[in-house]
Length: 71
Image (cartoon, rainbow, N blue to C red):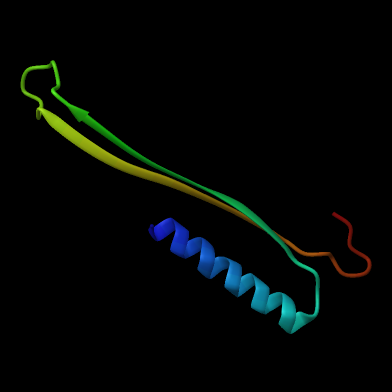
């Protein structure tokens, strides 16, 4: 959930910067959210159930370089 909010915020910020400078920006990214749960561990001394939430957010923003620059 927090990753999705960060993605929305980053998209908004990059879009505002692009409009302010009148340049063409490209923004891409991905969000992977995962919830895993285990019930009935077979090992001794471990909780019988466990849950983990993990997420990965990747963003990439690009803009054209000015005259005299290449990339």
